[in-house]
Image (cartoon, rainbow, N blue to C red):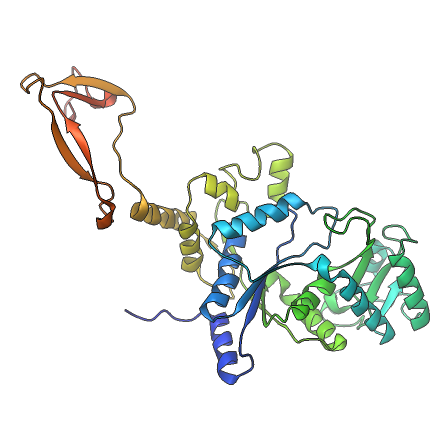
Length: 400
């Protein structure tokens, strides 16, 4: 049998292991608990957990719970259930909220190094001063606050002295950087909202870029794998790790796979649920993992689908027929066969002995020789589908 070729992430990992860069790899699956997982997430789950299994590494499940307004415990439980249903087990269960104190200290470290400042501009004003491709941004009038003042203001932000949006913490990088994300990005914002785990303890929350790479580093993640939409975030990911002088986790991007005729946006799926267009996240019409589970899809069929679409650096659209093929193939292998007459019509064979019954054997599953057989009684009384019989049939009618 021809050996299956490696995808580009596997090639990177094998090179790293061969060169001795790592003795053991560590991956993670970091969903935000603001909705149920869909088929796109299933591909990422299979990739991260599959790589850890293939190379004898570890894979963590980490909930990126930095937005208390949209996150709920219901989603945390559903995500864990979906991963287990797919047949995967995490080596460690973590939450970004576990690291809030450490992330706060990291932010303070940046302030003390003169690499972060508290800004009073609104989000709209910050957006207006960002500039554009080829046009440098304008520095905030608060950019050159003293370290002492920034420390005091950030401590006051944590203490709840200010309203939502009144102040933010920004990294001090370069307002003329060709990557707009590097133009003094916001790394902390104020949100007076109850968190599903920490309650009212925190009123400041790290932004994605301040939480993601640092959480990877805390967990010693060697290969942080995400979709191509985060490619432009990689320079900031690396800048923060470098300036904080912490474990150098590395980010790698692959192309997300869209399925034709299928809504794969969590924002759109939430809208369908909230507006009552479906009966819930597990409605069989939904492309969520819990939805396709109710439709009768099997864990193996989802994993086979993820393997079939593969991993690449180019985005493309996958035909839904491929997923249906994987489901049919798996069900054909495992399903027990039975016969049924849904709209019965009684038929009597007049030239067959009325009190005689013959038992016929049929395989439980012709694809599985170990599945055994079951018996079907045959007598002069039979039941057939009503549509299979006509008293006055037309030409070429090949039923009864």
